[in-house]
Each structure stands twice: as C-alpha cells, then as structure tokens.
Image 1 (cartoon, one colour):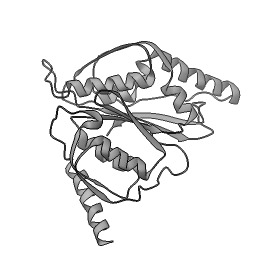
Image 2 (cartoon, helix red, strand yellow):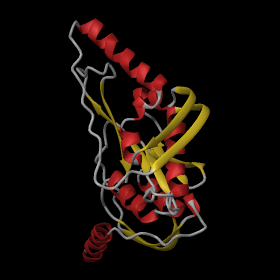
Image 3 (tube, helix red, strand yellow):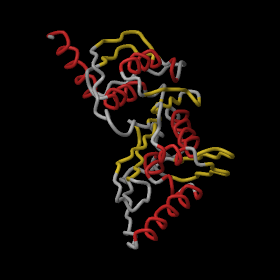
Image 4 (cartoon, rainbow, N blue to C red):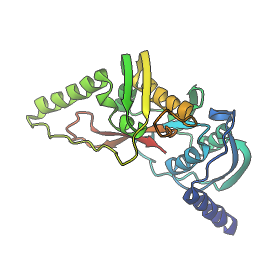
Length: 252
C-alpha cells in the first residue's frame, strides 16, 4: 500500500511539473517515454498526463467512452522507464479494455472506444468532400468551433436541431461560443483535404500542429502541438436533437 501511494504521489508531481519528453526523430506510438507513472486514476486523466508528456513527438485525438464506467479507475500503479507511448497505451488498455488505439497519421495517435456512442460515431464519420482551413488562429479555437469550418458538419448539426424544434414545438435557444484570445498574435494554420471525414480533418489539424510545432513561422509564434477531444453529455431533452450535448476541445 505504501508503494502504491508513493507511485500515485509521483504521478501527481509529474503532471504538476508539466514535464515534456525531449524532441526525438521517433514519433507517434514509437515516441520515447523516459519515465511515466501509471496511477490508479480514471483513464482520461492518465491519458491526458501521457499526452502532455509525449509532446513534441506525439499528439492524441481522444474520444472518451460514454455511459457506465466513465469514471472507472485503471486499478494499477506502475512506473514505466525507457519505454514508448505505444507501450504505455498497451498497459493502459490492458487495464481498461473499453478502448482501442491507432496511428492514422505519423505522430497522430487516435484513442477511441471499442463501442462508440452512435451519435458521436455519426458525427466523426460524417463525409467531408473538401475541407479547407486557412486562418490565423490558435488550434484550440479551430477545434472548439470545427463545425464553423466544415459546412457539411454545420448543416448536419443544424438539421438535427431543427428536427428537435419541429417535434417538440419549442424554439431553439441562441448560441454564443467563446473564442480564446490574448495579446500574442495567433499562428497561421493551413489544412486542406478532400474526400475525408470530420475525424480525418481533426487528425490532419493535429498533424499540422505537430509538424510545425518546432518550426518558427515568419512573424508568428510557434504552433503548439495540439491534439483533439470530443465529449458527449447525455440529455434526452437536449435541443441538439442528439440526445445530449457535444463539445470539442484541445487535448491535452
């Protein structure tokens, strides 16, 4: 018990210090992990710590499991030394087999449930014929408001809202999205894809930030390596018509 408590304390200390792995020519699942503590915390907490540690060599797109067991803890306490991101993920999924992982693009790791929420699966697999994102903005802003950059996704979500309004006879509420800003000018982001999906666009955005994360753009700050996360909060009365609310955010 004393050993477990010590390992958990070390895990919290590592997270608090925001330690990063040194830059390596090995990316994605093969990216090196010099030291990482698997602690008895919920899967998403441990994964967030791993994603923070893995930069600038890997970024993660994460779709948490929805439903029973969301807050289930890993139930292990183990220190990994001189391993890889893929090796750590394998240990995590051995402890919580609700998830699978893959590397759809070099350096971009996707972690998702074996059994996806049907609404999230429909949204993430929605076909996108021509995606073009050319903005001066922070990656998290683009991720948070991805429907505004993908007309097919925007139309789909609006159609579900209108269907809910028609069936319930209730008006749709107004919406106000927050935009992160500051005194530092945002970087240039440029992603172009054809015949892809919403998930594919998010992965491409993550890949762009990883590629440019160690390069200085002319008159622009560094593009921070940024993964993505999609969450679903069930609510049968949600005006979205999806049976809940969908939110997008950067990860970690």
